[in-house]
Image (cartoon, rainbow, N blue to C red):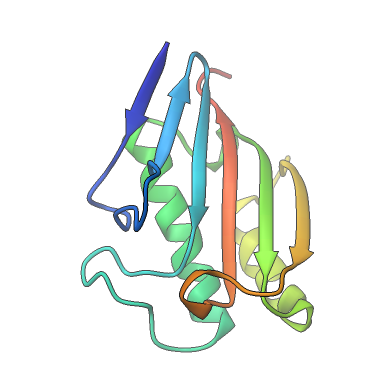
Length: 127
């Protein structure tokens, strides 16, 4: 079973992809960048504001399927600058206070719209 997931509480896709796809008992959330869903604009501020907005976008997508961060089993964090790791790690940790998921974190040459951070997650729909 495959279901396309969209919510107006997270930014709309800016290309030929879905915000998330539910396949059986897994939810694959596309990489989220720091766009405010209310305005469709990049959030003001530095890495802290961007990281928080990304996590809130992910939270909205999870909630649209009745899930929380406790359901997340894997994440991928993409940074424009590894010097931002400590700040992103601290904010990320606020959303995973216990039993965090498996994770990869890499620095990349460039991200869409020249944002500083993008995060994708995979969640299980039943615990």
